Length: 201
Image (cartoon, rainbow, N blue to C red; front, side, top):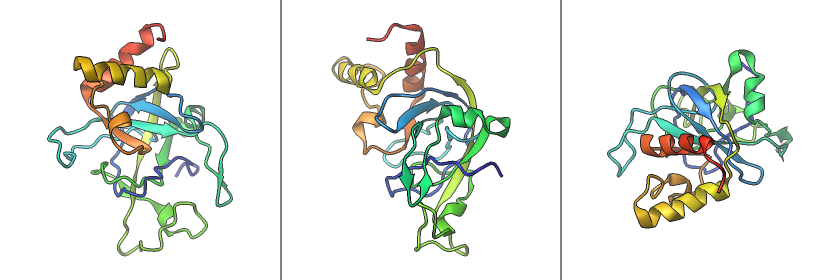
């Protein structure tokens, strides 16, 4: 198993994450946590593909926005730092995405061992090996985008698209609680990727 990854969802609302897929990553500016756009294909630490339909939404998500932590932050004596460069440095550029606490991501996954470790920041005393509550996936780095796209830039497009019925009008990054892992529609994912060839606004 690759070295323990330091990125997880702090929402306190999750259960299973499904195996991510080869993914295109992109960091977005968000203070110490940086979102990363991922696509699905098969892979590890950063994107998860889910065939399960989101509650209240009939669309089955295949793309996920995942926040990484490129800067050091100590929690329970553990440095939570794990950015894109850390993922690239892993064997096969692959690592587990442990600490997922977001019920939106479900499907093929495996038990998150951090829930049983009392010294781990993601320890959950309500979970047991006989009845585990939390699962994780593996994600794999594919490439970084051609340019850095800030959270502020994404928010500007979201505001604009709300009035013009654009692809980011309902983007979960701005319309749902700020989770570390959020679903993207294919339309949203394609639009975000298209930004890499444009000048920043």
